[in-house]
Amino acid sequence: MIFAAGLGTRLRPLTDHMPKAMVRVGEHPLLWHVIMKLKQAGVERMVVNVHHFAEQIEDYLKANDNFELDIRISDEREMLLETGGGIRKALPLLDPDSPVLIHNVDILSNVDLAGFYQDGEVSDAEACLLVSRRKTKRYLLFDENHRMRGWTNIQTGEVKPSQEILEAKPLEKLAFSGIHLLKPSLFPLLEAWPQRFPIMDFYIQNCGQHYFEGKENTDLQLIDVGKIDILEEVDKWISRQKKKLSYL
Image 1 (cartoon, helix red, strand yellow):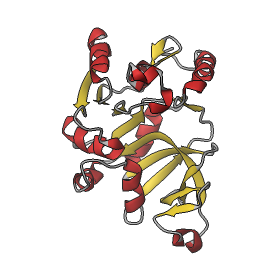
Image 2 (image 1 turned 120 degrees about the vertical axis):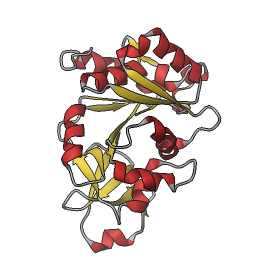
Image 3 (image 1 turned 45 degrees about the vertical axis):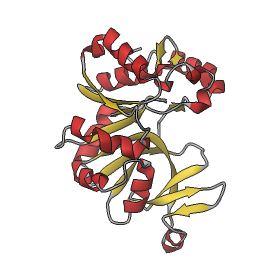
Image 4 (image 1 turned 135 degrees about the vertical axis):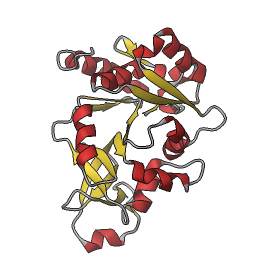
């Protein structure tokens, strides 16, 4: 599933006239880069959620014959459902018996998605989150067995689900990449949540009772296309990756 429904407010004024997914980096829209990355990994069915200028995404996919893939639209025009609500709404479009790989449309990386998916399939974890040691303000907290125990904002000092988790045992801070995998065992739990909610809230609330694994990629090269002043840097990053990423 590709998260493409966001408003992209940090990319204004570009997103005053188009969805974030259609912002061009290199020679193609962000959506193209993520679709090609997933196709390269062997993905044949994808769900793309839409909200902001949704028709532009639909028209782009139609014009390219869905890139010869089974691409389904999860329509959030009436209400932007955030990441958790977006997954919940898309469940009928997904295979109920297979793990779902989730990828933010504004994340470009060198990660081996096929390998990440395969590792997640054989893991005992019900969710696998791709993490790294890059600097950020918000971190996920993991124990020595790579099990998620919580979340923290190092700028504000906030810790979830509670401050007590830091006192119980040493925990490692790792940055979330916007790429993760959910097992079907979690789908019924999602159904019990509100119509609109962030998936990270779901992970934080349930990490004490369910095994969510942090998959650390020590060689991860990732760029978050979140702000307009980073677009020039993104173009340079894509140029450097051309020899490594066959779809480019």
